[in-house]
Length: 616
Image (cartoon, rainbow, N blue to C red):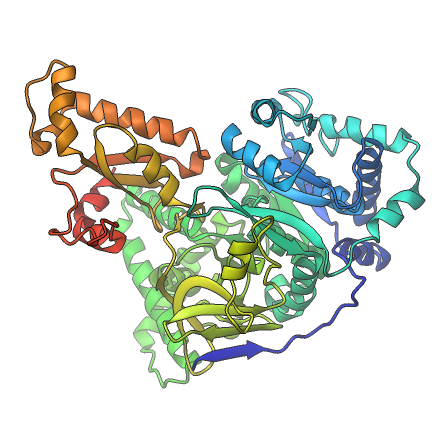
């Protein structure tokens, strides 16, 4: 099959914008609490009415401080309640949100502020305020900074929201800006207007701002909610812990808002397990790395208790049980032996519930995205009683373009197109997407925008894939060089490689990390520079092979790596590297005749060295 589509379920009027999802929930009575917020050791529910009242007060503050419809307002913070409140206030003021990862460097923040035109920034705490100020110093233009927190103990027993933002709410409520003025600003944008600029890594080193419209968020929300109704449930609770700076988490948050779910936020990985047990979510949004950690922790716990062999047996049974279910779902006739059924029933009483308890005990389904999921891992969780549904999408598609359904799963695929979406496979195998989630183009970059679409208006994902006879998509590779780590972080290797390669001793650099827990690098030395460098540093002549292990050489390369790391966020930094004994050449098959690097060839040739970089 070369093309698959799912019919759009709901159309929205042209004047609709994302804020209307919230207003509609309020007018319908609000249903379940909209948010659950952690303060101190307890969790406190926030009703839709209370949230909307705070959104309107904060919108008044924005208008009072000079924000006008169409202005850009940035948010630099971890995932938390205040993030959601700030973005809704930006939209209520008729403005455009610009998310910034909380780990971003001043270099990155300065570029985003410059390119987007954002001159107002919400910053989480004193640390992020400092980063923004450093960026503003380079920007050379005045920028208003509004902090969420006012001190180090701001969230211990503070009201909801935190004290810093509470002060802004009080200022907004006391301002001369009227409800009528805010309501007029809220209604200005329509479906075709920009809701947010989401900056994504580019191969040129300058992140590109993806123009996401109100149609992207709104139509995905109203169409995906009924499509995934069995997963979302009725008034179900969920725990959001992925970065809200990423479009994936924000798109799903809008779906949850529309579907009547209660949303909790967990800003720290250190408290994630504790938070899941407290919130007891019915469904979760996660990335493969989370499932890998849960599985590894469960195995380590069992091994420490002398039950490692039992865990391995339970895991094998779960995988076998799920594979049989998957085969039946594909229409195959599968015989499940009484022994398998008996073992599965036993483990479902004594072991699988402990695994499910790690996620709070109530989770029925999880949705995995952002990077490739190991099929056996999916089978393991599914066989243990937790539906693990893999989906596919990019920033440019408002995240979800395809997803497996609760009652129609094919492990190893990323599911079928979401409603209002068509997936096409190009003659060269590239996955093409057209539909409700596809972005409007790249901000201030008409050349990149034009190159992102084919002649029929399909977005070119840069990934390769295949569709089966039922329209399920499988991703088979990447045309792009963008690396996606196991944690779902997109990393552009080119700028890092170029920065390290600029060091005198370095000849070639290949950044790696696809589906790995962190970014690493392979480095080769410049043989022509090695002799003079050795002499300048009082060393005898070293061959490249000997130099690859010399402490001073390694320290010099580390210095270059450290310098490169200052230009990116923490999640993108090179954590480890290895200096290879020989350089890449055309003869070795690693360079083209025009001296361009053959990345795939290098990675295949040095697979063993790469594996060692990730060994503990």
